[in-house]
Image 1 (cartoon, rainbow, N blue to C red):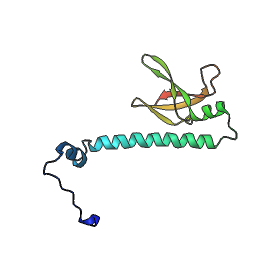
Image 2 (image 1 turned 90 degrees about the vertical axis):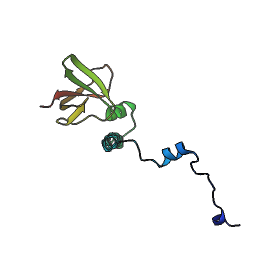
Image 3 (image 1 turned 120 degrees about the horizontal axis):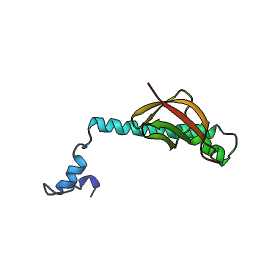
Image 4 (image 1 turned 135 degrees about the vertical axis):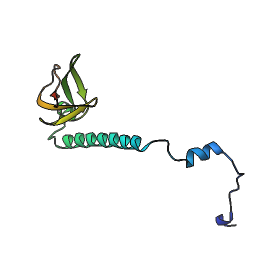
Length: 128
């Protein structure tokens, strides 16, 4: 007997929930898929920037690596100043950074406000 001769026999309506999950169209809308794709592309961009920053280093020094792949952000909110960690290489002066759906421009890069922290601090101003 050959494998082509074998047929799987199923009763009609067998496992309807499984069939619905496997063969029904996804419940996501086009906008949700686009948003997820945008988030994934942003994570990939950050990872590529981290890798490029690490590859540009001459030697392996933990403080230099940390300074190259992460930075601190300082910006103003109506409630006061915010100092936040950013898990990506520091942006360049003049770059636009989006935080919580608000655009900020990098006014300058300064040393981190935290003692013994090798990271740079991006001083951000609201983009107008």
